[in-house]
Amino acid sequence: MIPSSFEYRRASSLAEAITMLGEGGDDAKLLAGGHSLLPLMKLRLASPTVLVDIGRLRELSYVRDGGDHLAVGALTRHADVHNSDVVGREVPLLAHVAGQIGDPQVRHRGTIGGSIAHGDPASDLPAVCLALRATLLLAGPSGERQVPAIEFFTGFLETALARDEVLTEIRFPKLGGARWSFQKFNVRAQDWAIVGVAAVRNGSAGVALVNMADRPVLATGVEAALAAGASPEEAAAHASDGLEPPSDVRASGEYRRHLATVLVRRALEEAGA
Amino acid sequence: MRVSLTVNGKLRESEVEPRLLLVHFLRDVLGLTGTNIGCDTSSCGACTVLIGGDSVKSCTMLAVQADGTEITTIEGLAGEALHPVQEAFRQNHGLQCGYCTPGMVMAAASLLAEQPHPSEEEVRAGLEGNLCRCTGYHNIVKSVLAAADMAPVPAPAVAS
Image (tube, rainbow over all chains, first blue to last red; front, side):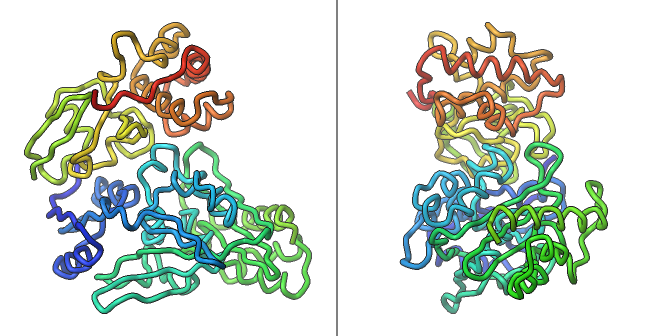
């Protein structure tokens, strides 16, 4: 399978990437590791006319200690996030989930920013961002802005990113010993989760779901029930409150609702809710 | 666009269309047909090659993205003798039809470079990105474990 033709432009700095995106018009796309975009392009589900390759911007690949949070550069590869000592120590939920994405080959190429900016409801990392209340840094022609993860995912494969903005960094609050859990249910190796749950218990609870809506979502009913003192089992009964989980070849919406209840309960039990 | 990359220790330069996938560059431009195309959807791992020593699915990368990198394909893995992973596959009959074998060998070489002495479970997890339609996993896993016991696995050969 061969993608449609496109103009290829390689950015040598973040500023240049932003300029190239602006020049590229509505059908320009950023290319980082390419592990979300290229499969879509090969299936011709995406046919951008301009690809701006930011894969060589080493300055966007890092993990920095920001005091109360860890700042992860958007071009940090999943394997590097997974193997990072500081991520393992300060945000172990993130280190764990980065090691669950795809398979080793995918983790060698795919980037944290690419996965999050793709906004796929079936991806694991957006749920981590939501559960942890991460903050995303976006850079555009008029400067930088911060967007809370809970405002970032706006629809199916749609995000708060403007056409000429680049996701540059994700800030994850340190867990500080808080307990967490990640539940991923799939029937084949390397598959996306049929349903997934990221949960953290840090005074209050953060619970987010994979593949339970048209976008990555919080389990707001679960969080509210826990805040009101519900047990894991009672809170888990609210797993799909207000959600319309999709039906597809892997599972019906009804099955996903059932699965979400089971997985949220397991996650809350593991996280000591 | 002109790309220049090192494949199996040799500098190769070519004018390519930006949409050319790395696997097609290797097979059709360079004639290195040991790298197979299986599913063409980033799933099966038959097209796995090493880039800077890391396993990568060459059907999910553009040749222009690989510009300037060092690539090892199955043709370049052996030195004077077979690479320990190749030798172990031979001794343990780690194949049935053989179609997935180049990708399995490259993925295993990358795995052992990262984890020289994996457990059986770690080998199975490490080969998650490679499918064998014959379901011949038993001897494949046995081969990788044997390769780990055989000799210190050198870092996968890049430019020499």
